[in-house]
Length: 164
Image (tube, rainbow, N blue to C red):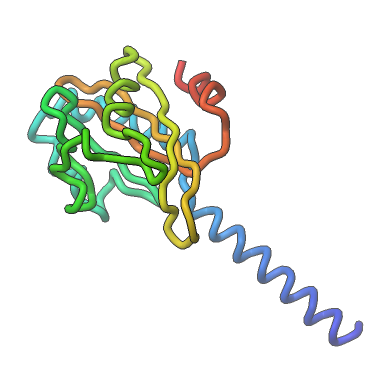
């Protein structure tokens, strides 16, 4: 076989495998739903004592390019978050990159009922330039609301169908 053809095929295969590896590092909407449901059960059962685990950026509640966060919508504070700069933030001050009032929207999604809801906003994607569409799924969890986000282009109505 021609040496250039073999080298070209090897380079193409390497790029394909690399792209697959990058995609494997991206959380999916299904993973977000599963993690948020598990976290809601954990926070309901453990209350305040469970919150510290959600501050650990290397713990079980952080995976791939996502993480679970915990909010106290009654006091309007981000109660637990793996980023120390965000933990303790007033939810009214939390804005999407296009200026969306993110904190109140996340609390409103949790207040929709037992199935919670999704919130769409613009956010900075690690390793990519500019702002990207991100959606977060939020559930009520006792005195708190828990959520996690994913970079996904699926319409919110289709995402909500996953959580019914």
